[in-house]
Amino acid sequence: MTKSTHTPEYHRLVELLVETRRTAELTQQQVADRLGKPQSYVAKVEGAERRIDVLEFAALVKAMGSNPTALLDRLLSDLE
Amino acid sequence: MTKSTHTPEYHRLVELLVETRRTAELTQQQVADRLGKPQSYVAKVEGAERRIDVLEFAALVKAMGSNPTALLDRLLSDLE
DNA sequence: TAGAATTATCCCATTTGGGGATAATGTGCT
DNA sequence: AGCACATTATCCCCAAATGGGATAATTCTA
Image (cartoon, rainbow over all chains, first blue to last red):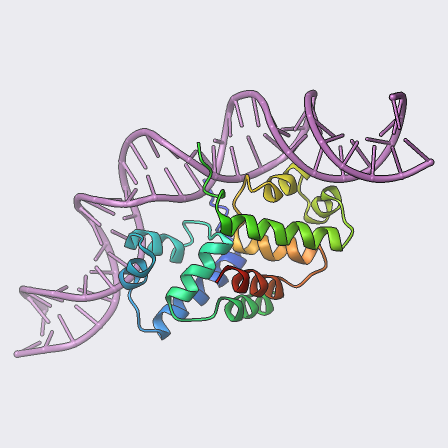
């Protein structure tokens, strides 16, 4: 059962998210709390076990104190 | 069975996507073809019957000849 | 208002999501 | 190294969402 999230694009997305969280010095639990979601949610996102909705992406990035647009920009230029 | 896409945020997202497609004077079929997907895919997205993955969002917006980052920016400022 | 073009909906097998609990891994300390 | 604590990954099970071809419904256009 190969997940549809197991693509280079998704991996890059996830890398950026993890990097963003680490830079913000936040734990998965802290981010999860800010979102009102369980830690396993963040873990699954970062493990590419779960797709990321465009609105969830924005909420997640904001919860880490970063800018969703800027991050998307970076992702897209990395991918092209 | 209330869809999780039936929220004001999602509706605004969809509005922007439809507006973008109309402005580009493209049909759902044309956009679908560019994405290698069936027309029903685009119809479901625009009917908020389906969530939009962050990478799908980018692909979709690009397929309409528009800028994903700019559109996300617009969406987020509309929502705040 | 027929006929074409465009968009919405149906169906249903398959895939994905939720989230608490627990396992695994990482980190720092002495 | 060995231990305690912090952090992250995985399991499980069932509800919910998705994919996409076919068809219906709606909208355009002449």
